[in-house]
Image (cartoon, rainbow, N blue to C red; front, side):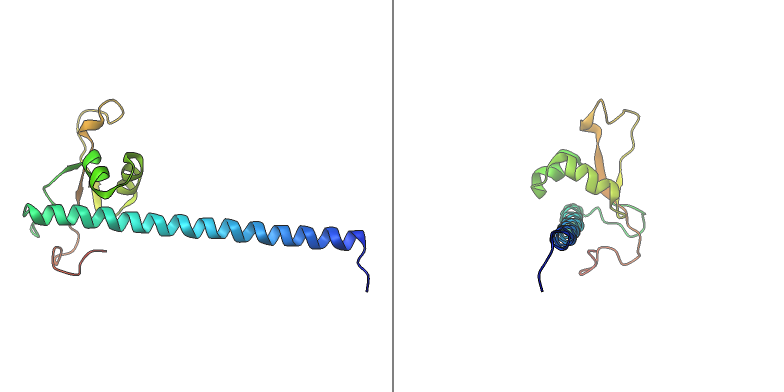
Length: 127
């Protein structure tokens, strides 16, 4: 059985296509895993800080302790832009909305926990 030029090109194209799809899927998986790990890291740090200052109040809908983006980035070892992105997509973290635009004054950018369940703050409750 001899392979012709067309067979070789077909095998190379299919192999290249499969390798490209595999690399793309691996990158997609890595990106989603890293996002989930960063979400967990930021949430745990915010939760720990709220517990330290006793600002987790089940009667309110959110923790009253606002943490600036720069502090979160510093203590979680993540870039500021990454913290901003993760906090904006996390369902349990809410931004502090002020009259000033974040574009012009990033010092006003702060985040807090949203307390959505009545047992919030009990051990083992970190998503």
